[in-house]
Image (tube, rainbow, N blue to C red; front, side):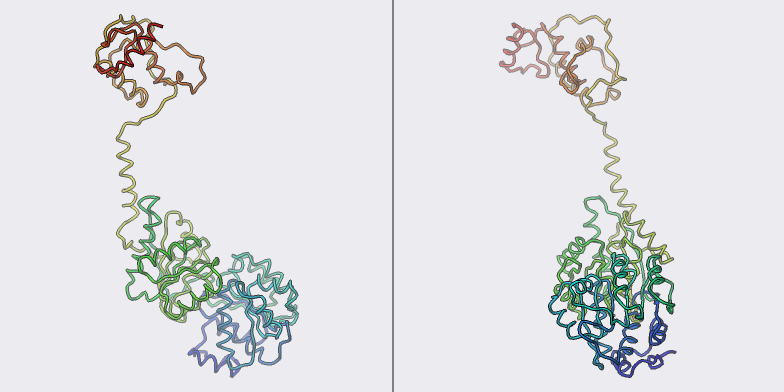
Length: 528
């Protein structure tokens, strides 16, 4: 079995490694360190959490042991996609270079330009930066990259996802052609392969595992979730997350919970805190000092749950993370590999559980296609299955179907029967109160109920005469099928008597209780 002492590292570096407690290099370290010490370009492909950071920091410190940096001219450059990952690399450098006199500078957003300029002016051996902040310093004339001897691109596939590839190509062109390049990634997209072919010279390819594979020491599972209703789905999904955490019991000492959207990160963290779980959010909209404090609390154990966006999926090297919960299935399948890689690090066991809502099914299929395995399905600890949720939704719908449909028709149905024009007109009569009430109910049914659903009834005088066509525009009251017929029926009762003194028109729908002021009004209109 290979040991660090077999890799030709500097004695001071070996002493620092021994202080960290590591004795045996990981496969990616054993494969990448020897060609890197020979000065060759290296293309390293390995799943996250396998020690890629030490694969380039250890040989870099050994190679930079001799020489001295000049002002504004770093001797080596490490590019990282996120602030957290850049800070993680800086911590590794401090740990492994503590017995040397090498200096470093960390260039990331959210910190003072003035402080960073002061470090660069003194001269640094190792410059660790995110692409955007590095270009800012270069364009301000505060940085010269012509003396870079070693250049490292870490998490190259994440650079692609975040749109940094044009910046990476520009930075490559700022550095000398004779530089040594170390390129590391967990996955290899076609665009990444193109860059390696362009900027790496006969690299030693070290692939210790198939690209985009997950650690065998990570227990994976997915819960298929479907809310009872659309309005309740988000709340029920948060209930399910808490149930999954509780189901893990004491085995879940701490966990990182990943969400796809920053707004969901805040919402989930607030919900967990409200229910008594020690949780805090971390995402790109928070200032750097807040993010740093949150990470420190999670590392030292004062914070149990870290709710994060994908900005934290890379660069969180916290060996003791026992669980990763994917509140959402990641939009990019590659992110799943990096998310669950936050647990099961340094040979430890880990658990990764994911919640898949109906809208995430396609993303789940993409993840399983990438990792070339079917993620085991887990039971819903809340006891609600998707089928039960569907039945719950279907029950009110079935009850609604049993009720007769009600519609408002603005025109006469083509299939409704036409009145018989040859039918004799009824002679004037005294309206019966019960019949008047029945007429009003029939009119209401004409307005609200499909004609086909009506029971056949005996023709009445109000139905024997067809309403004359009107030239009024559509949408006017006379064009409404139901209301037009109701008005026509009243017009035909012109001259009929009623119970309130034999006035000219009958008052339909009030029975025997017609108020005097209405009767009087009808009498005046009849007289006119």
